[in-house]
Amino acid sequence: MATTLAPNELSRYSRHLLLPEVGKAGQAKLKEGRVLVVGAGGLGSPALLYLAAAGVGTLGIVDFDAVDVTNLQRQVLYGTSDVGKDKTRAAEAHLNDLNPHVRIVRHAERLSSANALTLFAAYDLVVDGTDNFATRYLVNDACVLTGKPNVYGSIFRFDGQASVFCTDEGPCYRCLYPEPPPPGLVPSCAEGGVLGVLPGLIGVVQATEAIKLLLGVGDTLIGRLLLVNALAASFRSVTVRRNPSCPACGTHEISELRDYDAWCGTVAVPDGVPEITPRELAARADRGEPLQLIDVREPHEWELVHVVGARLIPLATLDAEWHTLDATREVFVYCKGGVRSARAVADLRKRGFDRAYSVTGGILRWREEVDDALIAY
Image 1 (tube, rainbow, N blue to C red):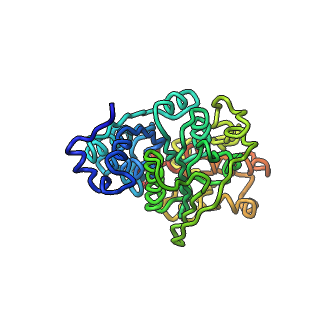
Image 2 (image 1 turned 120 degrees about the vertical axis):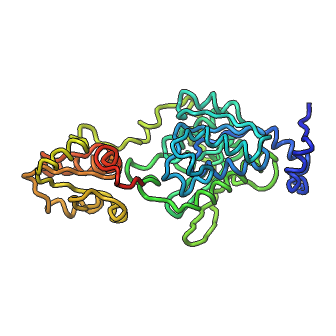
């Protein structure tokens, strides 16, 4: 039976119906459409809002996180009252209010090699709103194996990218990026920051591409990578061609999903690095012990918040400044979450600092265990 539009839907979508490229037939296609959005964060927020407003009939949301106050600078799907709530539940409530004609399917779980193929099979296309390399490769490979288009987007600081991968006529993400960068080379948005409106720009592009794919109209970003620089107000695209040797979409060597965290080196903490918890270190400070405490974050992070009594030595300058530390005393190193400090301690120990320790969980855990007056970022 052909999909029909109710009278109140005809009114709601009237501006679509005036477009010859959409019309009633196209709006019916959107109502029949099933889109899975992986990640309900900076990119997923605007994509979900516009897909729901456009009348895409079924929207699946994959996210296992809760809303944090630091999200609100860019994740426009949520409000202050949502802080602490499950993202999929908060998203469902807002999207149902925006358009009750859209069915929201919550997948409050982490996307993994165990569930990706089953999840993707139930949808027409996938919008990739993830923020790490391991999940991007997982999304890509699952899209290739299930034959679902991958509407890709990524953001960092002032720069964004968007494309459409994994179609019959175009390349996949691996054709563009055959291998992930070395662990720690590219900081996350949590470490490097992101302009709040940038995910809006890229997320709206992703929603636009998804709608065009469902309608079968226009020129999509298949075979092109859109590059956006918000600081320079520049938009340009480059051609991306399918790689015949690509193990995913070319030779099809990849026939099943794998452990992507291990392959991408997502956890870049060196093995065997001695650690100390913030609570243990604070107890020693309370006893009056003189501590050699080093902060290896960036200067702008230090200005935002730091532990009193620490000394700033950004990780990038440690090679030039390690000799200014006292190797005969204990050295305690912290960063934001514990990754950079672990790398610093591993380096210091190679240089003879046998009493160097990484502060577990960084300043974020310090805030939880020692001083909740410190701001979270």
